[in-house]
Length: 206
Figure 1 (spheres, rainbow, N blue to C red):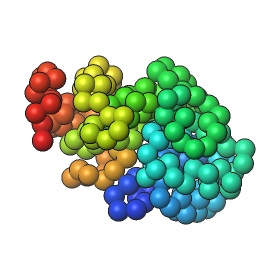
Figure 2: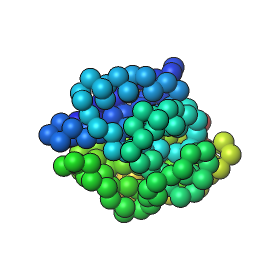
Figure 3: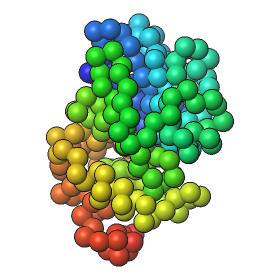
Figure 4: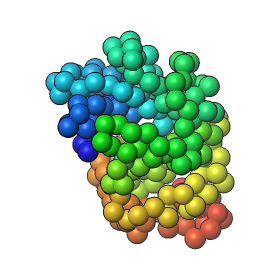
């Protein structure tokens, strides 16, 4: 398994998950400018299998059609509810517990509402956790935008993210923290949104 973290725009991250042994890849959150992602895929002679959207916001999904045009056989992946807002045809709908194979790589999906109603996170080979705008390094995604919900975000973080293994490497959708990625175990000990003991405490975090 290999993951390439690509900085796009001012502070967004896009990702390439790829399997060197069989030269298959997935791009996650092709927002703003997909040029770097396309160049990386080409440089490694990879075949793009999936275009995965963690949520529908344009800064994460805006270049999906461009990537699809470059790799017409690639399948667009999203949750059912967020997929309806993408403006492109979704080929694979995912929710809690769904699983895809990328060559020898396992992709497992969690439905993680809060930032948007149908946000998803991706567990890659039980080694990495791509969190989109659900969990950042040191914080979580905004809940004050249309479709956002503080109560859903709290439940997502404490019922779905917190039980996951500490060794997972968190790869967020934005470079908002003091480092571009971190272990989930360290985030459990330092991230104010994961340390909140109840929803009332969570709701008072600035």
